[in-house]
Amino acid sequence: MDSSMHKMEAQLKRWSLEIDRLAAQTQMAGVHAEFDSLLYIDELKVLHAIAQTKFDEFRVLEDTRRARLRAEMKMAWHDLETAFRKRMPGTSGQ
Image 1 (cartoon, rainbow, N blue to C red):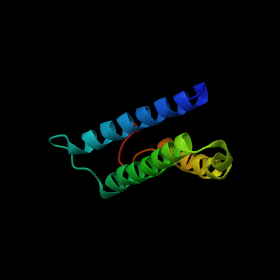
Image 2: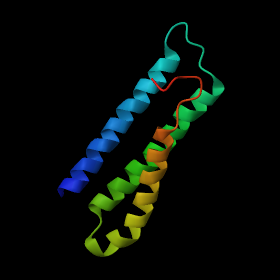
Image 3: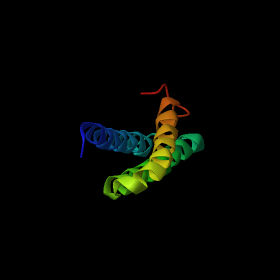
C-alpha cells in the first residue's frame, strides 16, 4: 500500500474517532441532544461507512478495476469530508 493509501486509512480512523467523540457528547448526563444533532451524527456514521467500504474495496482490487472505483471512492470521501465541515446543530462546533 502506498503512502497516499496509508494517509487515507489514517484519516478514516481519525474521522471514526471524531464521530465517536461527537456521539459521546450527546450521551453525557444532563445533555439533551437535539434531534438535528442526532441526525448529523447518523449522517456522519453512514457517510463514514460508505467511504470505508469504498476504500476497502479499492484496496483489494487489481489495477484494472481500480479506475472505476476510484471515482466512487473520491465521491464518498468528499461527501464525508463536507459533512465534517458542517457544525453539529446545537453546538459551537466543539
